[in-house]
Length: 284
Image (cartoon, rainbow, N blue to C red; front, side, top):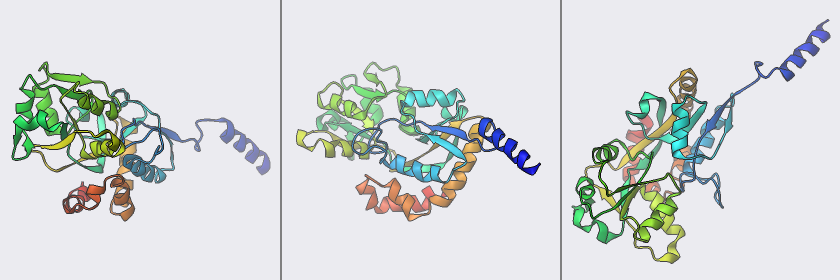
């Protein structure tokens, strides 16, 4: 009798997809943006965001983890639609919080910088920093603004304030290599990106003698954080709670810091980065 029961129980588990052994799936949506994410090429899967995501997902075996390649706009749209999707590292903004739950901080980045040829920003430099509002108000300067991308609350607020200006050109969420090429060919005058993004580009195009340079934006803190974002529903809340418990275990480890600073040699040796990591990042 016991053997017969066990046989039918086994059949139930094998053919019932909603059994106790079935797992929910999280679609972790990313897009190709070196060195945070490499979705193709020689370093596929080795970006620092991907390294951190791998550490987190290994601690969440109760879920199936898929890694679809998408765009930032699609990732945000799917989260807003309440699908079972998450993003591993988004800026937290008031607008996004209306439809998303956020984890504690997963990444610590240098804040975004102006990327341009020196002559394009020279009139707007004040104490070696760019006055972004003054620059945007100058109609002779064209600004390539990647649609859907957050540059942090302070920079986003400036762009929102001046969003109707004709010299702000919306760019599709494309590989930043193409954006930097637009700068080099004088199709646009400036864009905004993380310093490690332009440094990675310049390192991989060293033979092209690029004139692009990095300029700090006035009145911005040196570092900012990103977090896992999931839909603002019961499923998303459950995932975020689990992610937070995993982060509490992982973030104090040497391995987590090594993953975060992969491809970011400047941060590996920066005393200021270490201070932010210990005094702010580990507590948020």
